[in-house]
Length: 598
Image 1: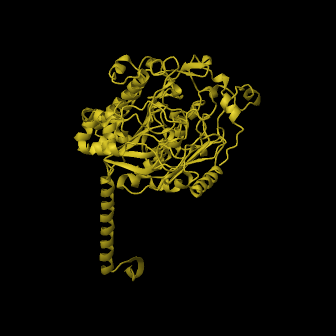
Image 2 (image 1 turned 90 degrees about the vertical axis):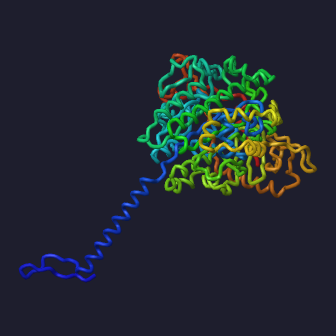
């Protein structure tokens, strides 16, 4: 660039531009000013990050919601969201509670966090490892405010494992795996104590208030009191329903609610159904409150079960996975294939059934992408097992997930893997006692399904208000597409008997979701490929973190409450540690030396 000297008194004092160059510089400055204003305007007008409401049912069976073909338990609020959003028809979770919740919170398979075996017991000195950053913490980094209502079950032996220390701003609910819905005490093995919290304080004042109602009230209150200055909302609604309660009252629900369902003949099934119906009403109240707060049109709502249902007496319960094989805590489809849906106005392709594969670990990266956390996700993706399927959901594109590890349990000697249309299962968790097909079948006659309930429900009314509820004919089409049926017979395959020592079984699970026809002999090369993949994954397994119960955790030492017992003892003292000598359950004692063979 050419400079000229401006002189005063014969000497140069500064440098400047000639007139032509000055005009050019003025133009450039004006251009950059306008560009900055445009960028600022675009930022100001950019759509706000969506509120995220994640509703997790406990022990809900695949056949316990209307949108999967049940005509027995009324779930109109959940169904309205399903028909107006996306039904996740090949959606997988872990086979039991703690592993599923750990996968949801970390985006990792339980085998990579040590949470893969059984559940976390209230007297165990362990929890989800503290070095694991979890979903609310990631979302908080993106400007969210996070709250939890209901069940935690990822560790409480020290306060640092509990929700308020792991990214949540509030928690009203319980720390352990289950409790009575009225007195809020948890019976676990030979121990008994109160388990209901408001933050870290024992919530004595909630005695006698039904747990589902407590969870709903806190959820609605969080939404009602949320302000824009708090950033977008992440609300984790973690229901107790339909998990059974204590042995003296395994299916706790009011007689008035039970009497509404007199069309269900079996009494235990009727009680379970009443628990689920109460949860469905909770979903409707949450949707209604989101609309009242003008948050619904910028929300993502996920509904999911944590594992398959405990059918026909399993765990003193009466859920239904029909016609799928197996129950909760088995690796059959009835244990790991869950009822799930996602609803949001942000989804361009709604009112459809998604037959692409998804795993519960996918929610963390999926919701992070939906929240605009692209940079964080790019740095994180290599350390996760979960994959973002946000584009799959929004644009109806193929899912990047082709493989699902259902679990590897080296203590029980069981494992299962799905790759594409094929599933391999090895071993068993109950010596074959829960490896069959179990009732109740539930009523599945489509003529008995009450479509008017969907329209009249709280969720249904809100969907109508948003012009999102499809026509009756489209609802029927969606429900039929999401209803699983079993083949009457096959010229191929044989029955599968899975034991710790038997050969693995192979199913073409897309065509045979009921796992009736073992094709291991007909397709040995497919089986070999799946075994090789499972062997590879097995090299990455972290040992299970299960610990013997600590007798000093007994609620009798803490005014008969379950509490953060680890903060009261010196766990670095070897002499003290030796006092904690409660042995593992007999099943684990006899099984822990088994070596799993693929």
